[in-house]
Image 1 (spheres, rainbow, N blue to C red):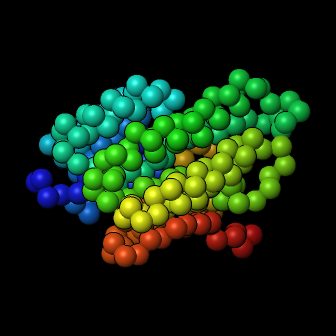
Image 2 (image 1 turned 90 degrees about the vertical axis):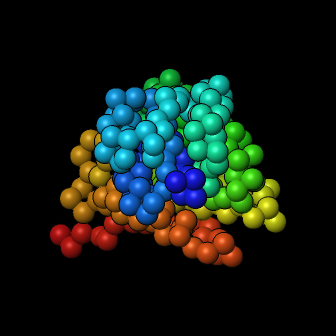
Amino acid sequence: MASQPVLLITGASSGIGAATARAASEQGYRLVLAARSEDRLRGLQQELGGDTQVLTVHCDVQSGEDQQHMVEQALERFGRIDAVFANAGRGGEPGGFSKADPEVWKDMILTNIYGVGLTVQHCLPALRESKGHLLLTGSAAGRVTIPGSMYSATKWAVSAIGYGVREELRGSGIRVTLIEPGMVDTPFFDEPPAHALKPEDIANAVMYAVAQPAHVDVNEILVRPTPSAE
């Protein structure tokens, strides 16, 4: 139905993005799911109601053309975008600043920072129309100093993007929320500890933020696993 709100998610094919898609579908959202893995997106589309409820878009967030196409397709299909979850990201590799592969750094920086910036820029016109909600996947790693971690540096940058865009949009009616997970059991980690968070835990945080009334702006949600008793 045209009255159903529309949530756009980047990095939607697995992990936190896919869990958030499922949670939002249960709450009556129509979905725009963007990622590089089209097969996984199509599986989610069929699971969550088919193409009348879910639009899938191939999108490399490092490409401005892909991101523009993503927004155009969303508006053509649903006519509106009420919330955007800029969730696409990737991790690094061991080696610290001394030994890590700089090509991995480059891809990670372009995905985690530049890609988020492009999502914000291309989605803001639609969010201004809807007085919608922008959510960004930061990290607990963006709030602490982790020795040798370029990944942590990129998530500090995402926090800065969140703070900066919130000030830019002050008075517009658009809400901005940083979602900052600790360690989550997703393909991001080869061997997450047994007490790691589940993707559904972070999806619940996203849905809490978007469910608040228009006068409530949840600025940040930091979610960490309860320390193991072992």
